[in-house]
Image 1 (cartoon, helix red, strand yellow):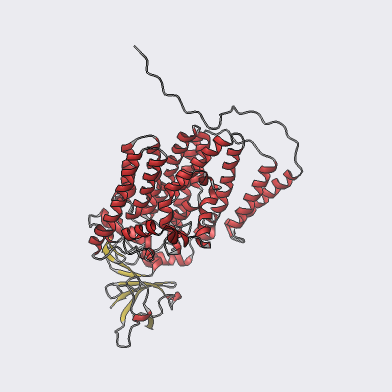
Image 2 (cartoon, one colour):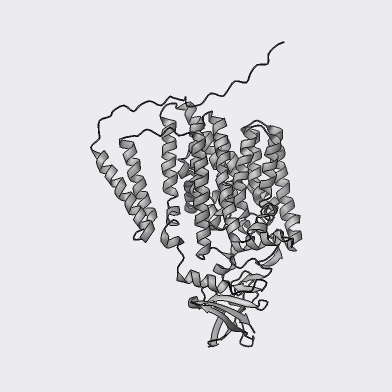
Length: 559
């Protein structure tokens, strides 16, 4: 009986070497001085984290620079740790650190109604069977963004309802994305050592940190799902690939755009023309259905988020036609300094390795153009949730670029590139260090006073509260951003110390005596008072009784 040929294992791009003892090297004159400098900079960083006598991120950059120079002058042996152990430690460390950062930001009133309060209320309503309803503003949530993936998070609220559950779930989900990065790199490079480094590069990426600390967004869940789809395509597992893609599409309606990129990558890089073509065309069709019929059905009005692309068209087919028929005129507007800086912030942490992989860059293009073509600057800022569809393709491109470098220039250059990428990523991610400072996360008296006041709000009461309180009060059917729907609310929660409120020039508050407050003003639907709609003198004022007071925080009950 003829034996079947056994598949040949892929050879690693960098040959594995047995660890050798370090040869004695002549001691460089600057090494002891740099060692002392590193110790002093590290001590200064720790003291700044404790007492904030200097910006911790600036001291971190100083320490990082000293370490980089020290390693360049006198390299040291890398510890022979198991790559998978490094991966597990990195994932656990990231999940713990960013759960801590995001939860403490929430407890110190640094989270917002949009989007954490919005998703807390949505998930709470899904968990109790009330459907996808929100009151920020009052609507069916699928009329704003179509995110059915939130049904999968609803069971969390059966056990631990509230913002903390969502923040921890998001940190864990983003951390788990490192598994897919490791798998992609290990299969493509044939070596788990650089694969572990790429997993760490993902975990320290500044865009990932920015996505994580900006409250909670369903789109952030697309990061590990898109990476998983790439990994399953590498494994040639179409059913698991399809499952990952379907879940990614459930994060938001415009997740169809990076899925188009997945189709391009499958067709051009993997030579799976039918698979890739069907994926891309199905994603485009779904985007049209979502924006033209599905979301307008739930909203009772046209799709609301194309205003950022009004210069290109009023609907998805018009925007696509503008890109295809007038590419030079459309893309010519991208060469401004803000957008070029944005590209630098995306590529710099990976030392421009994705540029060595042109096919992967083509796969990145749809998600990248979604941000670059928009007129809202938040789209092309590298530390926002809008990078959720870009980051997976950046990591995939960096791995492919490194593989090409390793084939073209074997020897010391590939490891040097990874070392440079790690140092660069840490430098770009240095603002994260500030969130670990005691001054940032330790609650102060005004925070404890706010918790005290919020505890006095009845559980089923409707309330109109200022932005910083809303995410703490969203486990109720009706919560509004003050002064929206003030006439519907039984209670209002405001910070009297910040009055007159910035951005609300037409909202006027007057304290008649210690226990009675009147508020007048007209607010727009977005929660900001409209100057054109200032309340006329004949408009009746709303009268409130001060139910509870702690520091500057006033809980007002409408009379």
